[in-house]
Amino acid sequence: MSPLEWLLHGQLAVGGGYLSVPEVVGNAFGLASALLGMRRVVWAWPVGLVGNVLLFGVFAWGELSNVVAEPLWGQAGRQVFFAAVGLYGWWRWSRLRRAGGAADGGAVVPRWAGPSGWLQLAVLGVVGYAAAYAALTHLGSWGPATEAWILAGSMLATYGMARGWVEFWLVWLAVDVVGVTTLLEAGYYPTAAMYVVYAAFVVLGFVTWWRVERRLHALARSEATEPPASAEPLAPTVPAIPVAPAEAAAARSTRP
Image (cartoon, rainbow, N blue to C red; front, side):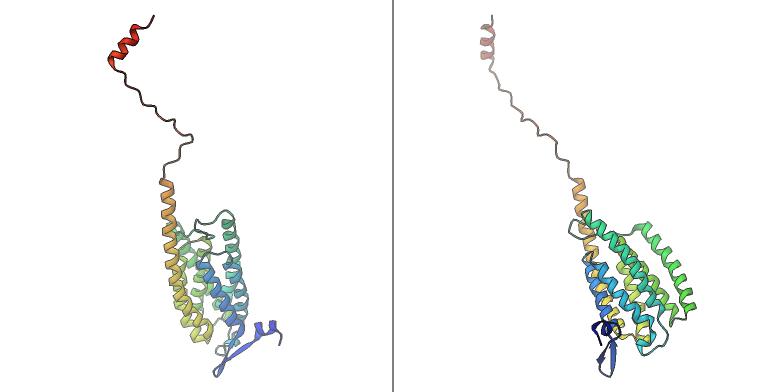
């Protein structure tokens, strides 16, 4: 078996069973992408794209789980969305990085979504879930109710990350909570274990971005309140020399 065939179709013997090589490697790329994303490095996006390609193949062939015969189209479909939004995020972060990026060296400045951003997330969440549920039910996916949220929530989180919104970490946490249960029931144990790792990492990522947002916001506010420097230095003021009355009278008497 060639290295490429092993990567796409290989298996790793573990105890009395096996693990799918592309599932393990794909999740490793996903974790690397998440670590880079927490540090706001542009490479988070292309690294994540590699994992998306591998995991799409894993979930599109349901027999790889050795538990369910039907493909998990919700899990497979979200890899397609990840790739699409990943390209957008890659472009946006690269553009911001070329423009100077954040003051601390990150590609993007973390910020809260605010009312307009929350409205976007709410609308996208409702529409995304309804569309995902209808599509997954039609395709005969294994668990359309939970998979629809995993798909829709993943869309929201990835979009929020591309925009630099701190809230995207909280959306990921909600996805992980549902995802762990679904993947354990479906027999995708490596990915379920990775979701547990993601959940802990998401909490760390949220705290990290929150602190960075506060620090950069305070820095920008202090720079905005600093008085502007004068364009030209002021000439020094020469103090007046006091003159005694007698001396002043003598000076007047000498005038022609």
